[in-house]
Image 1 (tube, rainbow, N blue to C red):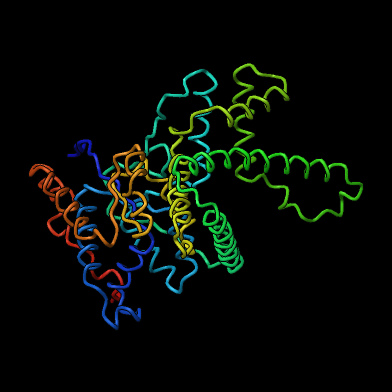
Image 2 (cartoon, rainbow, N blue to C red; image 1 turned 90 degrees about the horizontal axis):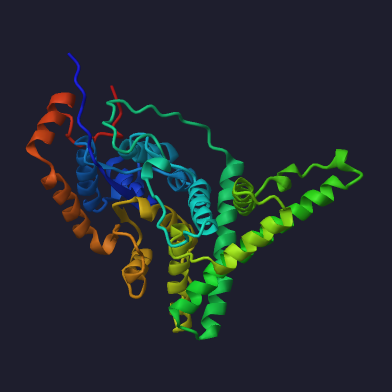
Amino acid sequence: MSSVLPKINKKVIYLDQFVISNMMKVLNPNTKANKKGIDDFWLRLFERLDSLSKLQLVVCPDSEYHDNESQVTAFYKELKRMYELLSHGKTFYDKETIKNFQLHEHFTNWLVGKNSNALNLDIDDIVHGSINSWTSRFIISVNREINMEAIEALLKHRNQSYSAIEGVFRLWSESKNTDFNYWYKNEVEAFGKGTLNMYFKHQLKLYEVWNNSELDDFEDYEALLPSSSVRHVNMMLKVLGEHGVEDELLKLSKIVEYFKTANFDNLPFLHLSASLFASIARKAAAGRKQPPNRGTVNDIEMISTFLPYCDAMFIDNECASYLNEKPLVDRIGFPTKIFSQSKREEFIQFLDEIEQSASQEHIELVTKVYGDSWKTPYVTLYKPTK
């Protein structure tokens, strides 16, 4: 006789790639780190997360960042096995889709005079799979061949991002301006200008190709694909059309007006990104000598995209320090708990409290549905099967 399982409300926890990597290493006997001996904190952490996941109390969605950063290692399949075990098929949409969703709602609110309205940030709108579903016993995963061209493109993008942040860091250092609000506003304005600039460049490229008498010989079709900035503007043009604005020049002027006059404090991805870069800028202006590391731009993009949808995040020390410092800590606007290696025992305590909050009835139901041994951590994840 079948019965309907009760609704559940899982805590959403995002794990940075280094967390996935260290848990993989501590369990995988084929890694050098495992053979040398690795901090047993990562074993304790895996055991807590895997157990809580099986108890239907937490879920750790994976993302394109996990996939991309795993591809450039020698342990792609092993890392994938780890993050898929803890996500149970719950995967964040790609960052540009999430940004476009937020921008669509924010722009629409501004257009109808409701710019102060908070956005509807439902995590089920931006993940594949239902966050609060009871998990299956099985995980269906498809492995693919590693694409070397894709890896080269990822590494090239990372190097370009690092070169760009190095250059900007020098400008910040030379400015000597330590006002957080100044740099925050500067980042917000740069987003609007950059978006429009990319859109008009793309339109010019299309015009040049269309009017090229040698169009049949044109081969750089990839250059004609719209960037995320172009897709943002195209979306806004469509929204304007849906609200009765027909003249194309008027549409563009409204978009320019939006970027110049809207309040972006409640556009999460931009607010968080601008705040994090403003924190780095004021440190540089105050005398910091060392620019951010190669992963900082990637980390800021990840945090600014996912933080509003998570109950907690375990991220690197540097970004965690920015989020816990004034004035940013008072301006985040979300109750997401931030953990890092410097607060890792607090993270274990946080996980313990989640289990302690579960009712005895819930624990008994999980055992009834899945079996007595279900919640036992899968510490033999990488052991060969006989």
